[in-house]
Length: 113
Length: 116
Image (cartoon, rainbow over all chains, first blue to last red; front, side, top):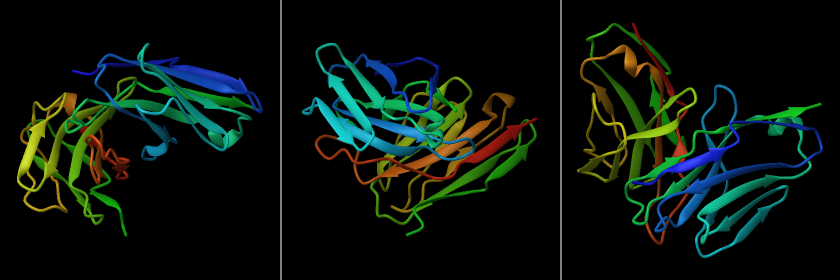
């Protein structure tokens, strides 16, 4: 089955700086890569996703890049703000997709004032 | 729309007891799934369903049963609770999770289960 590795497990950045979280996946047939943000005690919520026919996608301060050859994708957050503090999960969908998303173990992003 | 509704929010069980975690969605989503979340382990898929009458196992199915008699409901049953099942459980649904119609997964608010 699919295996998703996520790094780092904890990331501390100064407010206003950029943050980058990286994920690798094992199944070359995976074609859908979402990112979820989970605030303490709350449910995961989708912040951005990318499909395998696209190399990069942006939404305001958030961007995701995908390198299919290397089987890795990354989340980039620019001009970080205190409300960006949360746990971020990457995920990959298997080739057929029907058996669900495989999630990375998460990155705890801490924004230092 | 209420989205994905999970009940209860909190539950404490004794070892060996059984219970059902309820999940309902009102978005007419075909795909529904259950995940458990443990510290440092991310979200792991327990069971999923691609439509009424169809269920399948995920990564960690042992000790859990599911059924999908309607499009809206996808209950998760713990047959004989064990301390290892202490976790936060999330139900999630999607319009579709397969090529080429991958659509976002919507999560419920979670059920925090403690087994003593």
